[in-house]
Length: 558
Image (cartoon, rainbow, N blue to C red):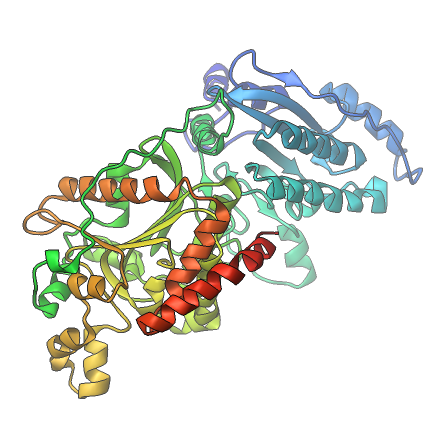
């Protein structure tokens, strides 16, 4: 027993157990949109019975009963509105109307809303609640999956943000089309999402399923959902996402990056130091982590989770936020400071799911035109059996190829350890920087010592031979600059270290953001093209690239 008025004031969420009750269309729109901002979108009123379908009662009779009970023409409504001042187009489904089933009318509502969002270049938010395609409309209902998916594809091509809010339940044709194709998938706690329902699976193939199967919490752990947001936080969550993507003049203004910062670009200006000392300094647990830096220099950060395939990797953090008010995507490896956090974060070694999550966020950044910042502190990619089963090498290789042609500014910073291909998979960038006490190498010093010296104790000699420290890497032009650290290292004064990192990012992006897409990609490819080539040959190769690369780049962007 619960007190009804208290239940309603809480957005129809149980104060004792947290259960989220269904909302009507009006209740949902009142929850999400600014007061008095709702404006209906005109949609062709489809009222057909293409199959002349009759089960225990004729289909038209079922429609009339559903309309009388809900006051809706069909199971979805499309409106314009604002969320904390940012314009949006919203489609809301109502499960009360024939189980929120997807038929021709619902497909038309969604497609019309997507067309309005495309024309007005406004983010599209969908609130899904459905049992699947509408059986009474047969193959016509099935075709709505293709129709709505095509509409979302056009928004992808136009660079318009799409967000899907999963409410309980969302299944079948809706789950397998527009509900899961959005850039960001937010779910209410406990909401169920899937293609085949639990009973279908248990009764047809007799599988024993976990208690939390297909819930938001299950799907978050398995890489399908980005965010689980309690109803009281939904509006703020959506507002952050929408404002970061907004390109409209009446949205939050995009400020210009302010120049500044002291990036060291001459290796002679750096002191010589023992390479092994650098390795030990880079590994100190007190050094700021990616989440530490994000908390100190990125505003309105919203973490995005999952690879949309099978898992979320806690060793890699990715999301959207603002640097000096400018929207950016931030991606970084995360180690932690305690034994428990290190274990939870897999000691900062990403799995294939981590690299695929980073690739998903990079593609989103490219779609929205946001600069990408990567923060690297990892001993390397995770080398376990599961990682190999899910194609770790392929995930790294695909990241390298993606970053080579990413049509937005990319700045990578090695903040601690830069271990082998696992680090490079996040550091194929326009500007590659490293902190003064960081290291970057093809293999760990211990690994090199074990293989070549046959003695792990020879790690200090291996570190010196590998030239892993900032001064040597700047001399070799592997990195473009070195970010100074406070006296005693970044762990001695994390706030000062964060301020120096912010200044370096600001200075780099000030140079990069005015460049057009073709110039960015051409210069980035030229930068990596010259590694290992003698200076004279590299100059010749650069000249050839200037003559040939633009055509290939244009074709790639097409």
